[in-house]
Image (tube, rainbow, N blue to C red):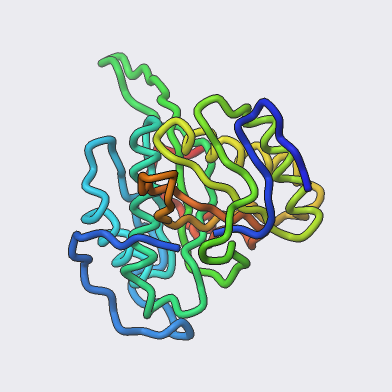
Length: 250
């Protein structure tokens, strides 16, 4: 068993159930997991998630985009927007359960830059943002009701946590973790991105992908909700082969 003293990360064994949103999803074509993706294959711009985004409605947009073309890209500026994006992916997974079959919505996060024109002279400024590549894939995930291996908090050191995640992925092929709230989710995303660099040689050109889902759990007398994630090596996202929003590349 790995330990993570001082990081607010506890490592157990195997790990993780899901919560549906009360929002009504946008309709998803009744296609099975083996059906070919329909709709445009190129040129789709990223979906933009903000800190005030309605996650139920945004989950419907994710569902429609993935069902239509087989993948989608989400851009988010700031921790709150990134957190809303992850919750939306969780909800979209429940909306698309029939479409997905045994697959899950896999997310690969990366840092990107939003180029903004700031002056009549043509000068540009750059704003850092998160870009999430989302697509369906059959990957290992933590078990329903089991404790995740790692717990992220607002004080977790992403570099140290990424070292633990790397070890778990190398030892058994995947790692599980949980987070609650905006700040801990931000640390989880940073950890995944750092772990991918740590695992570069092991991945051999692949990416480190993660699945996310909402799970209710009992904390003494109080019921709470956390995001549970599972990370494993995956092929490069299909969206990387397609040009997304002009002027907002990495």
